[in-house]
Length: 187
Ligand SMILES: [Zn+2]
Ligand SMILES: [Zn+2]
Image 1 (cartoon, rainbow, N blue to C red):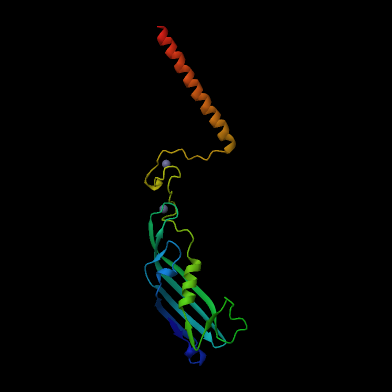
Image 2 (image 1 turned 120 degrees about the vertical axis):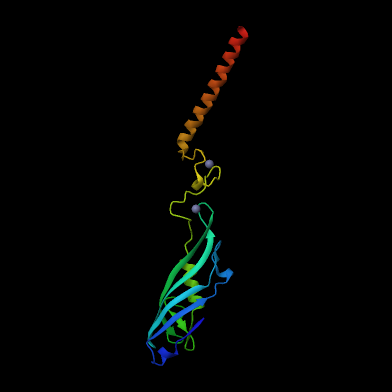
C-alpha cells in the first residue's frame, strides 16, 4: 500500500489523510500468533517537502495462546507509527531507522506497518490479568479450581531436613508394626 505524497511535495497540500488496510501474511506473524485480519491503518501525513511526519494508528486482529494456561486468546492489537518521513536521496544516512523513506513521491506503508506491529507485539499474551495458569506438578488448569498439589517452594537446605524427617517417620512406622506383630504372635 503506497501513499501518493505528490500533493505535499508540490506544496498543494500540507496534510494527506491515510486510511487503508494492509494485508498481513501468515509468515509475517510472530511465533504462535496468527493474524485474523488485515492491519487497519488510519492517520495522516503532514508537513511540507522538507519536513514530513507520518502519524497513524494501527489495529490488527490476532489469535494466540495464553502464556500461562495455554488457552486460546483472541483480540485486537493496537499500536501506532509516529515517524518523520524523508524523500529518498535527501538524508545522509538512509539506514537511520528514525526516518521512513519515500521513493518517487510515494511512501510504501507495508514495511513500516508490519515493523510497528511485530516489534510492539507483546512477548507474552495472557488470557486475563488474574489467570492462574497450570499446576506445575499435575498440569491442571488452576482457573478451573485447585488440584490439591503441594506446590510450595521448598528451600533446598530445608529439603534435606524434610527428607531426614520423612525417613525417620518411615523407620518409626516400620518399627511399630514389627512390635505389633510380635505382640499378636505372643498372644
Ligand atoms: Zn490463561
Ligand atoms: Zn496439581
